[in-house]
Length: 118
Image 1 (cartoon, rainbow, N blue to C red):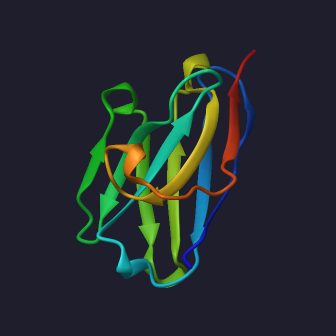
Image 2 (image 1 turned 60 degrees about the vertical axis):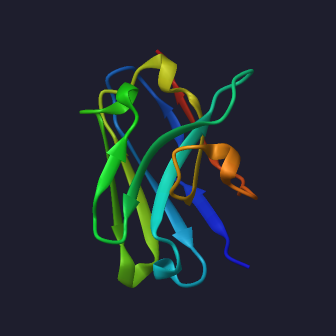
Image 3 (image 1 turned 120 degrees about the horizontal axis):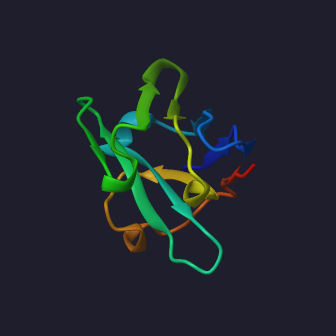
């Protein structure tokens, strides 16, 4: 069973940056795309971004120009560089197979908490 282990979250001030990492156990190429999602307290989990095997990326409008997804196939890693963070970006961030509807994902890892506050 493939597992996703996220890390890199923390507390950051508004305008700051964080880089999240995700280790994918198993064959990273078994996924046509890999993505990041987030869930804030009291809100539904939402799509943030994905990257396909060919490197095509898609971003939610609320992160365009601020977040960048990348991956290292040799290391089975997916990354999310987050710049110009805003308080509304505070959430638990998850990586998983890349789909725009999180309801299609069967199981989730622990995620990593990102808190943007002064």
